[in-house]
Image 1 (cartoon, one colour):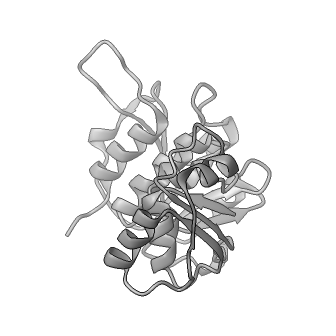
Image 2: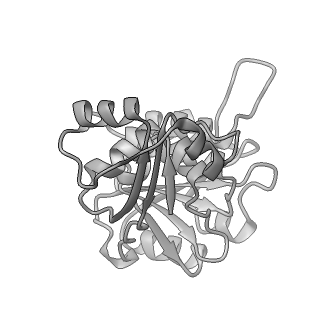
Length: 231
């Protein structure tokens, strides 16, 4: 896969589990990498910024860094720890939204993000850039069927909380506890009926203003802040 931009590339270079193939860097970016990351695991090819822009297109904010790397290995679903905090994505595939969710998940030390093979977000450079290095810290676990995965997690003692702006239960009324899986639906479509049925509770976020729903990545951040123990 291709990674670009400061945080995705720097975090990938810090991650010994990430296989590296080719690193292009401007002179200034290469110097900054050496100063902040330390000895690099791959020798950068020094190029002018335009060479990277040609590879990525004019809209990519690459900050002078372009890395070709191996995808990270995905842990097995059965290997998820019993005390984990998880996010489950129900057909969320937009790379900007998923990347922002990954970044938030890394900030709250989420153990893994569960997606399905059929509707899994592609690990693109756009997703990695939006994740701002979070891909190196939060693994994706791919399952065949999300409902079956939620049922199994429930049998293992996980509290399964779905988010829906029309739900009857306010999130503020839920007591934080782990192990926990927070289930997020795609914007517009929300949670599928079968997914809702596999949650212990479906909750809403209450807001005092005129807008009563948020972008799914913002909703994930608020929910994690409310439900994940800190310290």
